[in-house]
Length: 200
Image: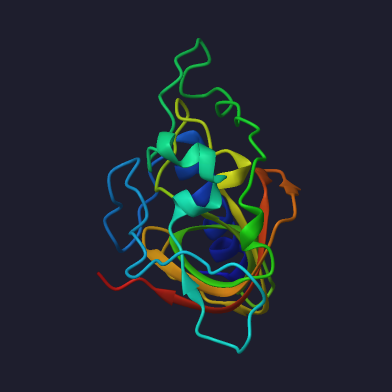
């Protein structure tokens, strides 16, 4: 496979699969559409006040990205389907623009599980910026997650992304900063220091 073909495949796969519902053949069988990201294994609330000494990154779940008063309504999966007359060849459903966030996460070192949607692939075939989303396979009749459920991730060194069907752990410094791209908007940005496949 040529570099151009591999790059086009990696860029097109998450866009088609997550937004337009197109099936993309890969070595791994994709999970069912709407499969949520695995839960953090030992999520604990952040303690108020200044951080005295550096500690291991805190594992967080996706509901913690919401303000406290919004967590009771958190479903942990894709939004309800929206049916219109666009058909399978139409545009993706509109993203619900909810930018309400958990400001306590700003500046925290965290570790969060999710699915990767590449935004750019370098000439070397490595991915250095991507969206992290809480569930797999949002399709044409299921809107992308709202911005407060998407994390824009940027890495100093790119990674070789072997499969879009795997869940990953992403570790890094979280910032409450909006980011808009051709695939949607996010309310968080993460400067990633480590990416690893989630082991169930």
